[in-house]
Length: 475
Image 1 (cartoon, rainbow, N blue to C red):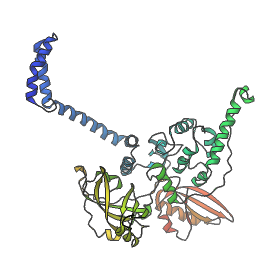
Image 2 (cartoon, one colour):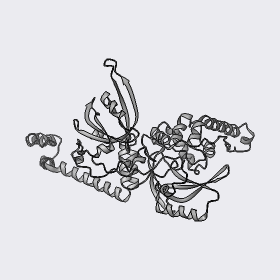
Image 3 (cartoon, rainbow, N blue to C red):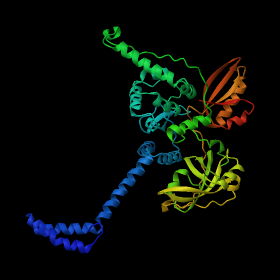
Image 4 (cartoon, rainbow, N blue to C red):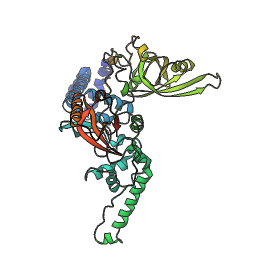
């Protein structure tokens, strides 16, 4: 009766309330006064109390997001870490706040998303949000707990140091592989390609170390009798196999994290996709009105073709990647034929209709456009279920810069007789094209090469100043 504000029911129950109070030996007048207060609260008190509570939550949220934005957004990401679409949406918001999100790493990550300080180009400490090790698919809680507890004694200085200290009865090959693929073991002396090719060797070394420590610390051993053991030092014999190309590294990252963090396969097309408005993000498909139209921009990663058993006609599915994740489209003969006329190695625009299938929003493809054709179309604003989103998106697609990470350093290859004047030109160009990629110099001397890390951070445009030289992407 209070919730529905039904005055008649409230009036009918007053006599019952007062009589019941008297039967329990309470004062009848006080019971009647209490009932009047209840009736008064039923009139508008519920709304006021809720308004006050929501106002407080709104103020507290706004305060935290303004003055503790790194910590606030890290907590938001952790609260939604089991929903990859929500993580992608919040990371998009984090980047809009100009906060850098770092990939997971055994020397900086906690179990959940956290905030850590890193030195910037000027040597100053700068806060960044770090992916939690718990977000790496397939690792498990026990290995992560052991890694973090052991790190409290000091950072892992090398892969050998990591193997020497971690308990390999908890860290298996199955949990080690996603750590390597996600970049969590970068900068420990070996490339991801080298480590992935030697997973068995690494695990064997870890188990052998565990066994040796157990024997040396046992009560019957000479070391145990002397009152302690020694920490077995691991020595690895692994040939450097170089590094995977950038595309493979990003695929591994997506496989283990469910999202691209250090870069995106669409980064190389950032200039071509500028200027489009009202495009729908893959993470927002579920929020669109059923029956409405949507335009999405993405790059086809894979097409799977089949032949219909009854019709004998070709059909298939396409896995498409945008900046926020992947989505799938059903392709029929007409669309498959259209794809043959298009360059699927470049981003395309997909005109779709939102349909519902088993209470889930699905995309029905109507037309595929190359970027040039799409620019001639006036893309309408999308229709969302939430009225608050029902407004035209006047923003351009933001630049998709690759974040600084262990897998995206840039190196310029020089001969050993390079002149000081030329090095000065490189430095001037680097200062002109400052970015987020560490700059390395690779000096060639006969059959040897020496890699030197500078303190400069650059972007891709520096290559235009030295087109005649060889450039390399470094892990």
